[in-house]
Image (cartoon, helix red, strand yellow):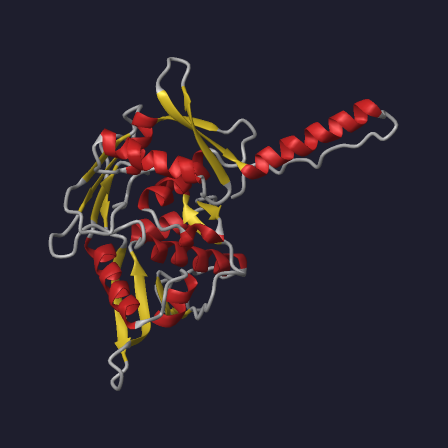
Length: 308
C-alpha cells in the first residue's frame, strides 16, 4: 500500500520574486478588518459586525507585541500566492509549513534587505503568531465561532558568523490554510499593492478589489460603513481627513476613488476599476464609429468579468 504524503511536510519554496507569480489574497479577509492600519503598537481590539449582523470579527493583541498590521499581512499574501502557484502546478498535498529564506521573502514582498528589515520581519512574525482572532466566518450557524492566530509557528536560522537570519519556516494556522486552499477562495491583487505606504490606502484597495472588482457600474459605499470595514481606530473626523487625502491622491493600483452621496444623501465614496472605464470608453468609441459607418461593424472585446 502506498504511503499518503504528509500535508504538513515542509517544502522548499525559494521564490526570489513574485513578479511571475499571480499575487493572491483571501476573499473573506479582504473586505473585513483583521489587521491594524498603523505601524505603532495597537492594543485596542478590533470589533466588527457586518451591517446585516450576520458576520462579526474580534481581533485582540498580546501586549508584548501588539496587533498584527496590514504590512505584516504581506507575509500571508506571499504564502497564499506561493501555495496557489503550487496548486496550479498540480501539487495535491499542499504544505501548511513553508520554507524559504528571509532574503527571498523580503524581496518578494518588495522590502529592503538591510539589517533593520530582518528585525522588522521577526517582529512581524511574532505579531502574526500572537494576535488572536475570533470570528463567525465559515460558521454554519450563529452559535459557532472560530478562534485562531495567523501563524501556528515560525523559525529563523541564524548565520553564526554575521548573526543575520538566513533560512526560515512559517506554519500557517489551520483556519488560514483552509482559507487559502479552498476553491475560489482567492482574488488576484496588483503587484504594486506592496508599494502602498499608507495603512488606510492598503485597506481601501483590498476592499475595492473585493467589492468593486471590474464592475462597469463601480461600487458605492457610505463613509460610515467604510470606516467600520477598515477597522480604523481613528475618530470619524480624523478618518474623514485621512480618507480625503487618499481621494485627492487617487493613486491606488487599478482603481479610481472619489466622493459621492447615496440616494438618501449620506456621504459616500465611489470606487471604479480603471479597466472597466477603459472598456466602456472603447465600447463607446466603437459604437460611434459604427453609427458613422454601419458597414464597418466593429465590436468591443467581450468582458471576462471579475478576476479570481
